[in-house]
Structures are given as structure tokens and as C-alpha cells.
Length: 207
Image 1 (cartoon, rainbow, N blue to C red):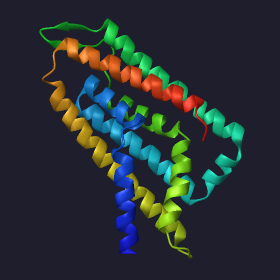
Image 2: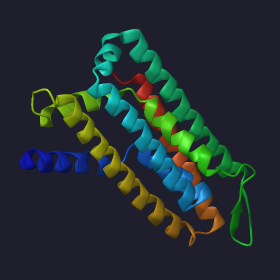
Image 3: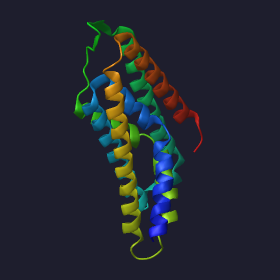
Image 4: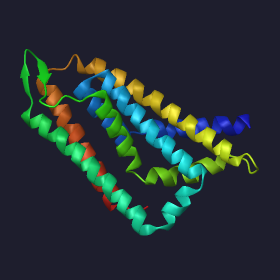
């Protein structure tokens, strides 16, 4: 059991540390609102993963993946949302002005909004559901307690994700304080382009 748990943590660490849309969104929101909004985004991502964990453990994901129209529609909604967030960053990069080397935006990002963005971004990616449904059973023994083991492993994955993204948020916030307004606008543009690219890839790729 301990061997399986260590193997799960190792696999999870590789997956979590590989940059993706959750990482890009956390960086984007941290640059906009600081550590607090970055951590809130991480919390939203982890919450979305927890929802997929429960769905995968209860077998709901099997119903989702069995319905191609539903799966495709959810994926398109998630892709559109990513493109929308990316477009916001691109617009901010163009319209933001600096004063005394401090970036001021017309629409400050609140922690609640960052949390919501993290949740919606993750729930709008049904590939996460497929990922949990395929990963978790490999480390759960068959038996009456399978559901609880799957749930525990999934929640452990969520906690690890939250911790990693929080580290990202703290690091990015500290670096962000040292950046000039022009550099921050450039980073806004880069993260915006990344989010748009991730949204387009989500919409066009197969399962």
C-alpha cells in the first residue's frame, strides 16, 4: 500500500509540475492582483479538481465520456472561456498605463473572481475527468473500499496541486514587484497568448 502511495505521489508530481492552463492562469492572475489572487486561483483549480475526483470516483465520468456530444460541448465551453481570459490579458497589455513604475488596471481582480476563474477553467476541461478516471484506478486496490481510496487519492492530488500553484503564486508575486510597467505588460501579453493557444488546442484536439 505504501509503495502504491509513493508511486502515485511521484506520478502526480510529474503531472502537476508540467505547466498547463492552470499554471498559466495562476501566473496571469498573480501578475494582475498579487499573491492573494494567485492563491485564490490555485484554490479554484483545486476545487475544480475535487469535483472531478468525486465524479470519477462515483463513476459519473464514465457517463460523461460515453456521450460524445456532451463531452465535446463541455470542451468547447472550456476552450471559449480560456480564449476569453487570454483576450482579457491581451487587452490589459495594450490598454494598461504606468505611473511611477506601478501598473494600474481599470478592472482590478478580486480574490473571489480569481477563485471563480480557477474553478471554471478546471471544470471546463473535461480531459481532467478522463485523466482522473484513468489515473486513480491504477493505484486503488479492488474491494469494498475502492470508492474511498479513489476519493482519498484524488483529494491528495488536489492538495498537491494547490501547494504547487501557491508556490508559483508566491514566486511570481515577488518577481512581479521588481518588474517595470513595460515588462509587466509584456508578460500580460505572453500569458494572454498562452491562454488563447491553450483554448484553441483544447477545442481542436481529440480526446
